[in-house]
Length: 264
Image (spheres, rainbow, N blue to C red):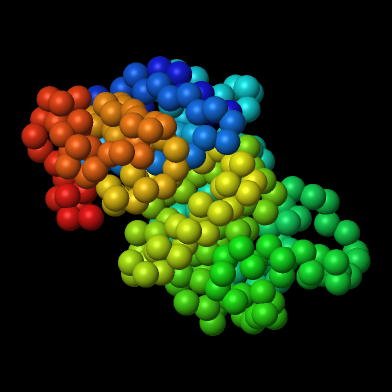
């Protein structure tokens, strides 16, 4: 479902601020695979997601989604393949609109606009049913303004909106980093349920090593712009944080770990 082939990306090339963000990056995700991504600051995690999303062009290599080469496609055209949730809970929703109106916008993404009743009774029932998966009671608040919700509730709603059309690939860019631990756990539980229910191919960036181990069926760790650890199946299930750090040290040839990575 996703193929990243020998991708390179350098920022500010030829200047004193030159930074090689991705170097010969290769990754292949099978349909329905849920892969967590971890690594220190500057490892290339967000650069990889932005390269897949088309935020900027890559210098070399290919990116394929669902077997289609999207390397040269602009960001707005790649949006048809993707669902994405950002770190900031305020980014994915319209605060002055109702919950059901936000969901209607997400459901009609890419469709032609027509003059008809804005939200039908059948659509309203469908939205209420989908909201139940979040386990936040939002199915009883369809007409509430989104701006009145907590950060965690808004992020959970953003997640639901990003997956309403069942994208070929779901990108989660540290989508629980701005939430308190209890709320983050709820959003992660909702993530697991939605990904499993819709069998979504998913890339989830996190700084939390325990979350990276506990969620998904595959884990990759990035360092210096490429993948240095790649574990899945039973090997991933049995991993501990200490073993993951040891794997990182062995693969990277470095005993250094980012403070944020260690503290989380």
